[in-house]
Length: 542
Ligand SMILES: Cc1cc2nc3c(=O)[nH]c(=O)nc-3n(C[C@H](O)[C@H](O)[C@H](O)COP(=O)(O)OP(=O)(O)OC[C@H]3O[C@@H](n4cnc5c(N)ncnc54)[C@H](O)[C@@H]3O)c2cc1C
Image 1: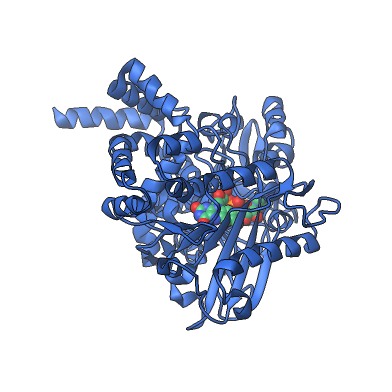
Image 2: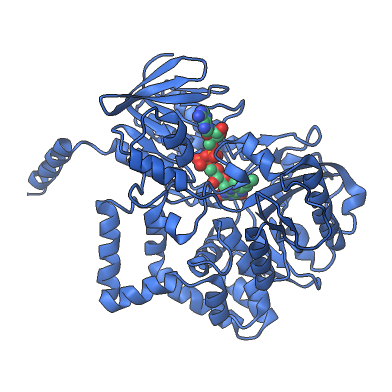
């Protein structure tokens, strides 16, 4: 293979977005992917029946559409055929008694919905927005800034100027509160708590974890404002468009090409060697879209000792499982008719239900009453299935990797590993729960495909133990400390080697935050050029 400016190891959304941003600025980029598809946790495929296009892993793109990479690449991607479709019914929670609560697209609609459950919670929603929105720049700034950098220091200074010393302690202390405490303080109704608490699972946390309160509010505001956008035709359309940008600049994206060594010469990363022994040279950067475990434990022949030790201690989070249904007709939900139009419905007894399921999973148990994430992509994009049919995308985020038992006392968990039989019996349990609310579910199933934590890990080495989020997001591995203290951010101890992906700040999700941050740093002109540009600016102004 030829020489490139940059070689990207792994074609996750961060690797591709970084590659596309560099390509847009004229770099020749080569992305190397071990799998036979590009996109990592983005894959659209007919895995059940012909004509049913399932998003096999990730499905919902609000983070991408709200992120820095989309802001810079959106027009290019649209030219390559990417189109987003959205909904006014992004999410809701269905409780065991058949009552449901919804998060809608305007402050007024949400206030009215919360008042429906408890008079006064509508005002509490408005108060939350009044407190959140003036400082939203700081919240989103944290997620879009290299924290250990001049820009990170600038963000801290901005917060200091706004709040003063005591104010900043008060504000930052509030960010640490759990969803239980924060939602409990704000809203009287358990329906409101149960509407927002399941969303903290999507940030890798549980409702009793530090920072989960603020994360629940970040998501609430983001969903109210941005809805639940998805690409028409499936998530893979985003991948296709990113790849097209890289190709248009003379780059390459190779599948079935595993990298087994990052080549280092005189302390600088100069390329990679593939598992078949080919060498690909990178004249400016190697970008590794992998876990710290793989980067420092496998890809570097002689990794810096401290980083290797830290990487060895990097912890992975709870495991997850996906279930895909192809249905002969759309699901007919019992109860509120809006359930049939809602993109993501959470089935849970409420905040305590989520807390219990998380705790059971943390203790190695299959939860007795899991939080079931029911995705209905056809409510937004009917093109993904033949007319009149149904698709359900089910996500279960509260599972252990080593199964010690079943909190419901029903399933024999055997050796504790994720066998095909355990996967299918657990999927049966979830299916039976769904069928209580969707009476036509079982009679309409054409096909069901379940993916256990072990299947997820086998599909993508970044999903260690089936953790969908690239490493636990406990406070000691999050924000300023991701992937680990002593080596936070994206620069590595090796010159020219950069680390991106869910294991790095700002963590998981399709926002491609780490890919965008690394591209920004790689494209920054060197210091002498910056000084000349600044001097020219000053002369020009004079
Ligand atoms: C089931 C599931 C559902 C999710 N749902 C959503 C959702 O709806 N919305 C959302 O915002 N987020 C969702 N997430 C999270 C989000 O998808 C991920 O955080 C994000 O896609 C991770 O991107 P990444 O850049 O870290 O790379 P990944 O997507 O993990 O891809 C890394 C790629 O690198 C390849 N690779 C690794 N090592 C090598 C090597 N040595 N050589 C060559 N290739 C290599 C892997 O094969 C893989 O393709 C979900 C995640 C999962 C697993």
